[in-house]
Length: 249
Ligand code: UDP
Ligand code: MN
Image (cartoon, rainbow, N blue to C red; front, side, top):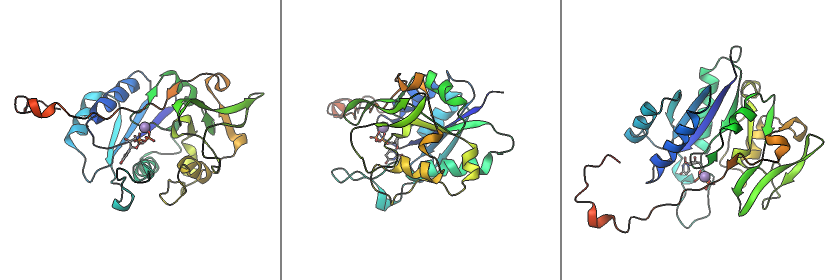
């Protein structure tokens, strides 16, 4: 059959969570042979996400892994890395549940609030080592992208964070699942400089720039956007909440 796409999504409880996850799940429904690994940032799996997974009809491993309290984001404070414990739990799940001798596939980190053109999944599906492509609406600009010359990645177009080995976003690359088994210690880490989660995992997988396969028509097309869902302020909710107590949110 065709290679499996292991799509790893960290997710956390907030008003917009179900809306974001509904959109993501319905994106995956349009893609062949996706295995979704949905990891809640919570002490227990929640009823809301359990219901969503049951209704969504995409093969899904529903896990939870709570962010350690010292690394929880506090409003107003410097932004800490998000999704670290959850993505690591998903990598562990793959190593524990997938047989490297049987499987063909690719690993992709699909955050719950991004926007995906389903064609990006076909671009990444036959990745030999690591595939890369542009990401739209990111870092205060229209797009970031690998720089491609003669069909090879030769550098990066990005706005900030030149200290990074690979100045790219989580949504801009996918790698062959076999790398997880040849690099058993590759993982995300809280204790690395801000903005270097992508570099951390790619370095752990021993990837170099020459391994990178440019996709999306030599990185000339945007097939994923780093959209961010606006948080809702419930300014009018108190007026009505008594009448609508029973709504199954
Ligand atoms: N996330 C999480 N726990 C948190 C904050 C975020 O699991 O405390 C998840 C979130 O659902 C998303 C990913 O981590 O899938 C990246 O977070 P976010 O989209 O908020 O980051 P941004 O896009 O702003 O960099
Ligand atoms: Mn996001």
